[in-house]
Picture 1 (cartoon, rainbow, N blue to C red):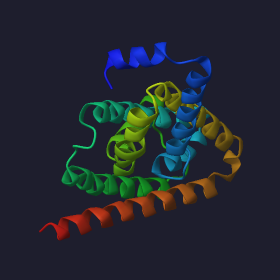
Picture 2 (picture 1 turned 90 degrees about the vertical axis):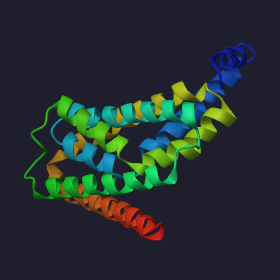
Picture 3 (picture 1 turned 90 degrees about the horizontal axis):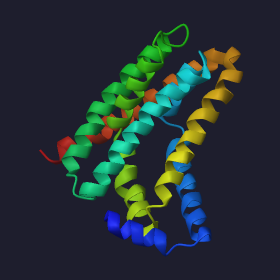
Length: 205
């Protein structure tokens, strides 16, 4: 959708439609941010140090969402399958390393907030599930619903990446259990991503 088309859409939209679009965006943002996965696993681990250390991981992943949104707006469904499946291999390796790092740690990492942001960004950019979401649900959100969902979408993510670390920090005394649960989630996601990537590679050779 071009900028001019978006402007015309806003002009013809009532307050009720605008709020509905934003509300749908919030729901879709939560649908991406809230389910258990590698990013939330690392957020939980780092939130034991402080809520903002956990949030910084989420902000990095959200920045990756902004990148994917831009790519989706430009190329839509034209991203080749082999690119996505190559990311399964790269992302799977990253997840397995992080699982090992979390499992052997005696506490949250020694990274600062900037370091956590970079890790969150890297995880987001190498996470094919995040890419797939944008090429499916994200593409639908932009093309079929309304661009007014985009502010609500990022508001939904922000709501999660601030509230989830705060909740985890309050139960940080149980860090040992958070650590093992986080490492297990990272391990399972990493192994599954590698499996899909290898299966695709064998199928195409």
